[in-house]
Length: 393
Ligand SMILES: Cc1ncc(COP(=O)(O)O)c(C=O)c1O
Image (cartoon, rainbow, N blue to C red; front, side, top):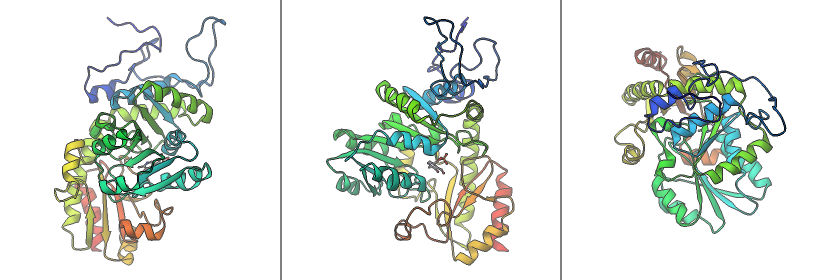
């Protein structure tokens, strides 16, 4: 029988399948008391036994057992060397961007979360780091825009909100041939459906606020590192910047993670039915959903992920229809964010993508009549009836 006597030693559980890893965690339960719900270590600091002896814990900005349990579980699920849990998804992205130095260049997806663009236009520019937005679904464009000083490619896939899918392996192979690091924002699919490190990427970032925690009750981010070397760098930067996830929020994220598989399956199944309904509705002009066989990158999705997720974007015929539709929705809530158990809808042009210029928005297809729906895990009939009612009245 295994008998853990401290928080440092843990069974990596690599032999288990993902659902087991997510439910049972890294340590899984408190090794000292046996508590099944991993304790919330709400302590800023730790008592040392003597100068020579300590518990491996010193100060909660650096290390905290609850956060560590969440981080280790995330690293297990993504097959990384280590993971770092941050106070938001943006803190995770900002942490990764510190890997760039002055005069270096980064390629980022053209269609990407607005906050990531702001980090590039503000923080990176102030540090003399340049960036180019490219369509990662167009390999020739990636090659054309790669510069001698390009050091990182930051890919969101599927993209937000246009649901474009980049070939992670193809891009990683190309980037590595030039010594360029590849980062994937895996917020939309999570490790349950897509494992970027196994496809060749170097780092994975998450807004764990979304599917990972899953209940719209916590802000969190995660960076998963592939190698110990990256992990050492990130550990130091985490300690310097201090945007670590609190013990309580780490516990909420850890609890959310236990049902990741169940929730993702339901989001996926519901989204498929909702997408079919929307596609056949006369008021819906266009629909963007990764799970359609005629989606331009459907074959790539099948190759690199095991599900399509719960996100759908669609266009209505006019801004008047959009306004009326949003007002008439009853069950589906008009709110920012995604990936929680509740169905949420947003209007990217006026909410999540205001950082993107109108010109780029139009080029990408983020029109004023585009809506982004995060399909929740409610009964799908109720979701469809709510959409039907709002579209038809
Ligand atoms: C794909 C993606 N990445 C990152 C973020 C930022 O995460 P957070 O809001 O947790 O800072 C978001 C937020 O919406 C997102 O959608």
